[in-house]
Image (cartoon, rainbow, N blue to C red; front, side, top):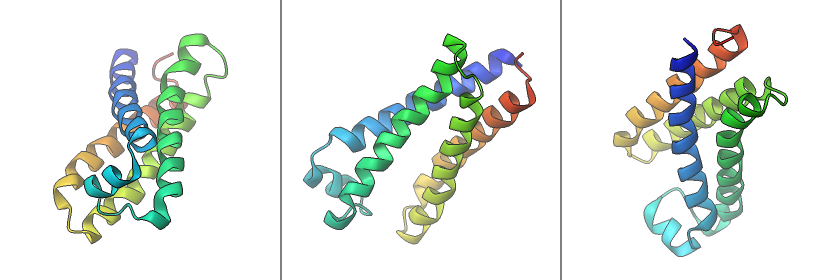
Length: 123
């Protein structure tokens, strides 16, 4: 089970680090072109979301690798699951239903990592 949890955490970390870095580094104009929900009034929120996604990605991996505060790994997974719970209705409302399956897979992976690490399946 530990290998499955590491694979899931790794996939999540790559996905959220990539999405977060994109939100942090892409110029505002290009972000607004790529994502319909981004407006000038929401730009700060988008940047904060990007930072939280990067921190969540790091939180999935670093605590267990370093052995420092490993409880942070399932907490990071819960936080990333919450982002997907929020993302799904936003995409549905904007008519971006093609994004919902990806959000759902990310949500399921995050829940798997959270439950597995809280339960000690990988210990």
